Image (cartoon, rainbow, N blue to C red; front, side, top):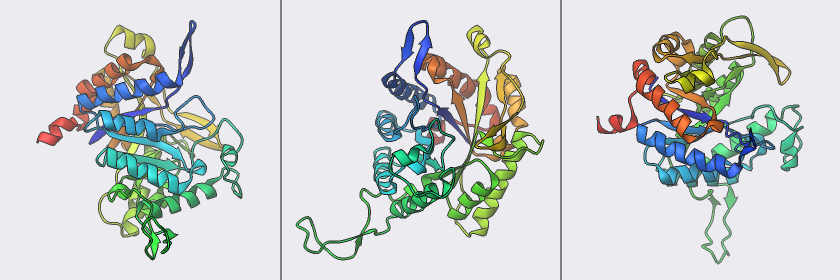
Length: 346
């Protein structure tokens, strides 16, 4: 494990006892937490994107705000639902955030997770899918998005335009030259991971896999990662792709931690999602020494270079920053992690 960060679901709404976390609270707290993590040397702050739900839905303003208030931490998504996106608008926004952050954007995209509405992307105007889950729309949008990010000319110049004229095809602006290498595909099965490898993008392995053959989640996920890397090599792509996995991990170092998460460790779960029998990863909760031992035996954590910790965003900045600091201080170094400020000065 070379890097770790947080994956926030960005939930907001009633907290009980007459209290409420508003959408504004959620975003402002995310900025504050990212600043605190940047000072700790944590590698990334990543956000889930869900539409028609009380969660983050339009992440680019949030990522730009975080990028402007931090200096080292990677900002990203895990993941943007491409069924809902105008590929060219997304390419413009992503390039802008990447330039603001000086190349710190890690943009995770995919077909998207199960929705709380029926074919919500059609309400956004994206119709014509022949797939019950809209996967065809997602991949079509993604392929055009990649062409735009790569700087391909897409619109014919108007030689008579008073704003420059010229000839040939013009690319989307702004353009961030290194952004293509920081695009990730979120995969929930082996086939989509192999497709990502062939496309030459990084892999965000999901918090679940649409496979359930009785083997542990981490073993299934490690095989998915191996398949992705093999597809990358077979496609002839240069360099080494990045791979991330997500885990619910709670170091218990105080009585408050024990109150919230004591006894929360559990095994893998089997359930039905999108009509498919799926395996969900387990929760890790224990003392730092217990977590180090358990994570060293997690096959997928060993295979990935980046670990994303899912955090309980409703518990506020102070609690989550202490949770992250406990992981950074007592667990991550034993797994091979070095803070960003130490890497920068090494």
